[in-house]
Image 1: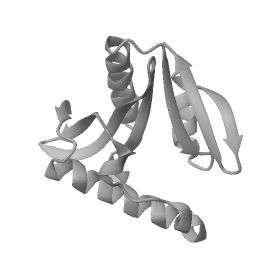
Image 2: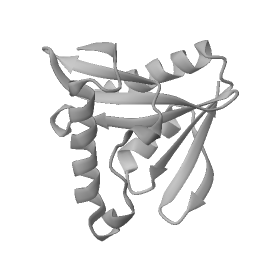
Image 3: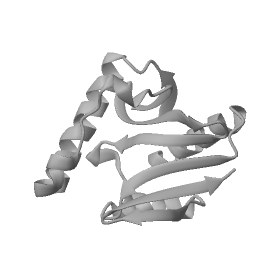
Length: 142
């Protein structure tokens, strides 16, 4: 496996984001009406792509939330590659980048029903800061 920084508008990134959107819409069922597919208004600054045998298998994005807070966005691993610590490796990449950017906190939002993701985030030092229905916000001090 290798991880590479990629252009936000690259074909591989757009395809991974689209696959993530399809997964989330299916996962959310009736609640999918509240889900927004990827668009350039997300203002993502960096995207790292994980590859297995040159096949893009997952990604994570970063954007600046405020002066000293970075944000984890669009963490996604293709189903058949989950459970191999790829998400942890990608999350570590974002954390290193955030520190280099001078961030003191890393933020993310997710759905509480995405239990494997919540477990990963908690084990990585994130703690819940806000909950609204099924959505939670988490932070990690860097």
